[in-house]
Length: 185
Image (cartoon, rainbow, N blue to C red; front, top):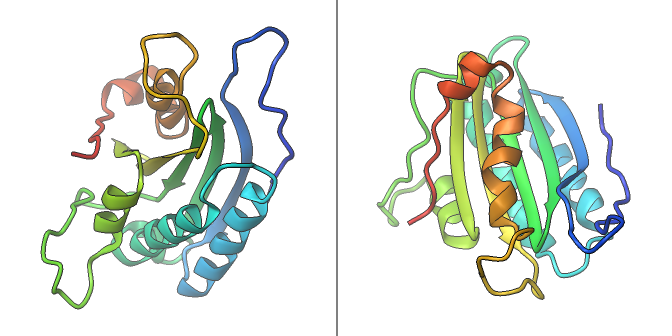
């Protein structure tokens, strides 16, 4: 279900909160990647300061990876994309149906393929993945142009990254304990 939504990112009071801006689940076939790009562009169209071109590129790479390298590309497979507004940026999650392997950044820049996670690592402020028996969530965080510098004040995006990313992949307390994350280096 495609649910882009306009979002007033300010709540009553002064603290901003995380909010789901939209989500979509698509069949795990290559022709669906274009629809994923369109969804991201539509969802981020009204959000000022977010590099929607980078978000579109990175989402396209992650959806392609999900279709090529996980059970999402098999019969009946799906890929879910969730866009979450967090203070100072957006968090994008791409949820697949799982695989035997883990997401790996390939270091060979001269290879003919395999640059998807390298691009994510290079362009995102942070990224990681969460695995559970139901699948893998690969997420990335893009900051807004006007995002404040990191401080220890509550309410910044870093307060929301781990819980927001975990909310999609971990569905039960046992699955929460089984998740892992890998920030960009």
